[in-house]
Image (cartoon, rainbow, N blue to C red):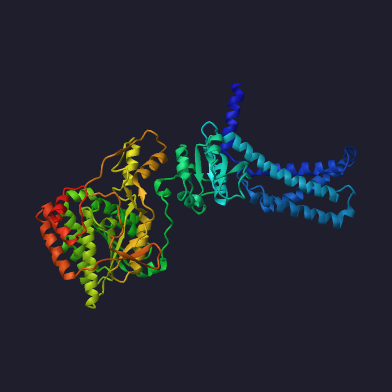
Length: 640
């Protein structure tokens, strides 16, 4: 028993790690042809006739084998790895055999009179042709079956369904089947198309995506569903993901076929579906040519270039072949990471990484004087609401004074465009950060209107306003992910709090599009899709992680935080643009000279480091700023 076990183990290891040599495949094919010809004679004649004409039969077999050998070589039928055989290989066998037997029939028709009457009758050739094709195909199928049986470790395999029964889903199933490290046991497909339901593909059934789906999954003890990349959009807009997660089923997806490195889909190429993949958002398209025409060959400055938004803008701008990138940030280590990324991916691109504080007017002027940027993306700002509630002076000195400094220098040095990144928190602000960004909007827009009235609008000022971006530094999703990994609890401030979300790349694409369409003075707002309840986001993330022991804890609203964000003031209207995801906000206009004086006063007060005085001055500039859950609420009571 021990010897048999060792022999079986050795055989399994040999089969799993080697491929059959060419000569052995050719030998199998030759034997198949020999058996086919002999079997054809048996079917056509009786045994006594074959014995009597044994020499002729032997000559016939030899002739058929020799002719087939020629065409096996021509069509390379034996050069593939048998366990990876596909329809292409079957087609190659079919063509090779068809040509070979056609040549044999033509030979018999032309020269048959010279030979014995029993030499290769047409009936024998036809029967042999059919049998040869069947045996050659079956030999390859047999090798695939044996290989799968010997290499599939059922003890560690996961019962798996594939969502998507068309080409993409079937390709995933095929790729997993030929993968020797395959840990996934295909038990079925799920399809939305009625014409595919209850059919069989690769030996398993196609089930409908209906109310009985959970029952079918339980019946097959399914532990994982692999979602075809073509089905990801559908998954976003239905409750299917929640139904599967409620059953504690793991969700995975595969990259598009164009991104596979080989016909074999390796386990590490499968990607766990994450919360970003499930947000119900339609893909955003932009006018690439128009954006490229604005950026190609230009000197482009990005402030806050090491941040989440600034660094993504850098990546997208780099693809449009700018003349030079001027990347400014005061965070040394993240900016160094950006420099390394540029060296890895855009080595030929002229790029300067500059450590500087945008509020340092002398330093910023020296940068403008040296590089004279033509296109400016202003993303530098302090953005965390609770931090700015506790550091009011820094919010003014960096966000407001820094924006004023860069905007004034853009005019002085003749920049063509200045695109400022704002936030939905600037609408009806309830916190210091949101109000500081609203003041930035007011200054930039009033400056643009002043230049237009004076006929000096060489610099076009554009403001873009959007909500939270997924995965940005310090945002809720990375925080939840970290809390889940540590076993919880996941902290949510309020059970009813909602937020708009957008991915960083799509937000930056819209920034580029808005920058290219703007003529100066516009505030563009983005269609952020449907708002997401943060507690639902947390629950989904916990379900996706597969953990059942992580609890959610409500901690109460933070200083300055509101339950929901708005993209527009109630007094504001919007106008459409040619892009369905971008609208223009019609906002109250301010006189530049008045704004300039009041902002200078605010900046001067910021250096007293008296939070109450600073916030009072902010509320004077932005009357709709009403503090919430903050010590600054007393100022609203006094004002009332």
